[in-house]
Length: 111
Image (cartoon, rainbow, N blue to C red; front, side, top):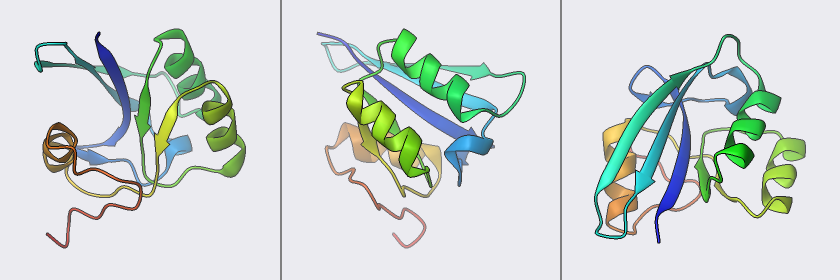
């Protein structure tokens, strides 16, 4: 079964704040282990729009930097796993996810 990730972006890094990101990386993990990536550009930064995108796209996991508790709780309530306080270049974050070494609070600048 395919899994989906949503990662708010700032250039080629995880966005430091969920509510200020206008670029979003959507990753589909196929059952054979392949990762398909696409970037969506939102017209304006909005935590509500990101939450709506996550729920409508049937996202399994949101990987983000800082996120306010209201939106964190909403996503969890909708059955979406949230790995927050993740910082670093997107390539390292995706590699860590592939290797099952990604957790909330992961810092990929110190490694």
